[in-house]
Amino acid sequence: MSRETALVTTDWVTENLKNPKVVFVEVDEDTTLYEQGHIEGAITFHWRDDLQDGLVRDLVSKEKFEALLSKNGIANDTTVVLYGGNNNWFATYAYWYFKIYGHQDVRLIDGGRKLWELKALPLVKEVPARAATRYVAKERDNSIRAFRDEVIAAIGTLNIVDVRSPAEFSGELAAPAHLPQEGGQIKGHIPTAKNIPWSKAANEDGTFKSEEELKSIYVSAGVDLAKDTIAYCRIGERSAFSWFVLHELLGVNNVKNYDGSWTEYGSLVGVPVAVGA
Amino acid sequence: MRTCGATPGGPSLDGVDLTKQSVIQGVILRDGEADGVPNGAPVVSAHIRLLDSHGEFTAEVPTNTDGQFRFFAAPGAWTLVVLAPGVRKELSVKAATGVPTDLVIQI
Image 1 (cartoon, helix red, strand yellow):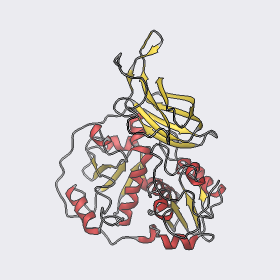
Image 2 (image 1 turned 90 degrees about the horizontal axis):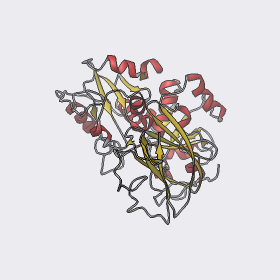
Image 3 (image 1 turned 180 degrees about the vertical axis):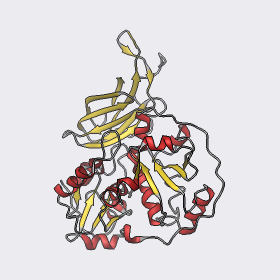
Image 4 (image 1 turned 90 degrees about the vertical axis):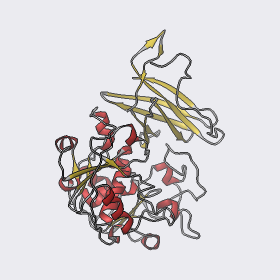
């Protein structure tokens, strides 16, 4: 993978608004943003209602994912272009999700909704009507998804990257600072994890830094890119962003997103926890 | 234009437990001033970044449909960076538990 296959620019978007092979999908943390205005022709997925099982804490089943894409007129050969607010957090999560289910051509708008807004590019309110398809997903690819037992086994042996803010890593905050500081779980981080906040990889306008800068961020923080890597955050969205940087932009193999993340790990009984910087 | 009777600053704090939370919030207004008091139009698509005392990025929110934003920070010194089309503005602010920091930011 590389920048050329994984990212598109806002200029590319403008040129491809009418391209019938392309479907733009907005995925936001604040799900009201789409209704306030979105890129012309874009559909939206709700990060919880569409992408979480709801009963079990898990991704939706293959059948539900197929139904979601079919209903929204996405075919197996569609170029899916994702974007969203919050520096593409939930859009990169959706990107990772499309890869889990083996979608061939999925990309991300570099800079996401923020850059689109900062450039004052047009947003519309019309919701497109798309003809249904019959989408067939692949079986889940768990080579990009970490589960808790692998994470515990990785302590002290593999790269564990905690992509939350320094205050969450140290145990000062339980959640990002734009969310209420609630939650009963323990605060802190997984021992031996390196704290490399997701935001280090992004420019102020939401675009990704250059490959040279990105590589240097991880290597200078002590990540040995020859080893397997597990990224985590609080609920698996910000770590999907960092997974995207490592796996899709830098082409590093054996990088997994631990989507259970701190809300799972920090609630497990008896596992080791570290606090402080 | 912001109406005269509107309370300046961020969204309503009803339901926020200020004994536990250190709130930094406010409203972003573009242009407009009367007697030295900002009264411009709320900026809907601004993005506010919260940086810690070392300048490290901590969080970011877009403004809501009334041009308002809110952070739940830890007590202490923070920097806000306001981004909007053609604008970048930095402000030093403090957060404290119990007393919300409520700002009217003119860009």
